[in-house]
Amino acid sequence: MSSWCREWSGHLAALVTLALGGSAQAAEVYFTPQADIGIEMDSNRNMVTSGDTVDNKASSEGNTADVSGTLGIATPRSDSTIRPEIRYAEYPNLDTNDLRTILDLNSQFRSERGQFNVEGEFDRESTYGSELANAQFNPVNPDLPTTPETGRISSDTVRTLITAVPSYTLDLTQRLNWSVSGTVQSVDFTGTDAKAYIPYDYALGGTSLTWAFNPLLGVTLGVFTSRELAKDDSGSVDANGVSLAFAYKWSTQFTSRLELTGERDNSEIVNPVDIRSTSTGAGATYTTAWQGQLSKLQLSVGRTFTPSGAGGTFRDDQLQAQFSRDLTQRLSFTAAGRFINATSVSGIYAADNYNYVNATAGLKWMLTRTWHVGGGVEYYHEHFVPPVGSANNAMVYASVGYQGLGKPY
Image (cartoon, rainbow, N blue to C red):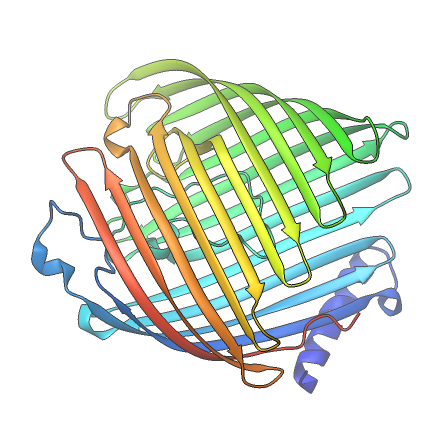
């Protein structure tokens, strides 16, 4: 690691630990920088649908640059991971360029009988990247509770998203604990076609009790309430619900969780017309993660209820899976896929119902301990209810990059 990386991460660690009332000397710190440059070829990058002008579907080449880093700070009672990323892409044939800035945070603070967690994300990027959810799991926050993507791509339009998910758990007995949690999210759109989206504020609060039958199995019963408010004063959605979850630890490398939910939504639209609707629904999600010596698998499947930039609450039926494996000491393989079918809960926004598939696969070859080359393919397909139609994009990419050595402890 370069001297400026050590100095920067050391200063930041000192500020964080002092803010927590700890000692800077008690913190273990690592910083892993990463940088990549690459090229890509897209067949229909702007995801022009079958109902639009065919001339807009011309294939395009792109030049990309990505800089990111992972900062980890650990003390006897806390663990924090911070990951900033900046990505720039230029597409000369389309006369467009994209700039993405993202910051992920995941922290845990422990006391003798409780634990406070906070997950957070700031993401500002063009709608080409923001409105089609990534096939791969977020490396810092893989379980963020919403999927606000609309599936709609607009030129020269940018989405800004801020999400915070705090929670606190108190151990009442050796087997019983009580938790309070929340989700706060704010979404804005700017640019040429910003009026095609609905910016919103969203807040959810809940409480739950967890009973550990044994060290392997835990059951959680909870209740929650939420409110989604459109920033353009077009409407709001109030929801209440219950949840029942089962978490099982098959081994230290294999964990699973099944959550059942029931929700009642009251939607009110005041612009351009006054419409009110009430709906109830049930959902279930299953998540699992397995970590072997050479392979890793993550899976999430089920139905959730989520705010959306398309307006109001949507019911998302989705499947997401990611598999990675070290083929040799230098060569690794990663594949991921995601399917989402989004339906407006109120039915008011039925014209925006859609589904899409995002799949990717790639190889990475380590030239040295820190330098690598890679390449792969990615495919998108999305379909909107008529008369909008469907769109496809096939992309091939290649890159070269640098990655730090990671945790020293």
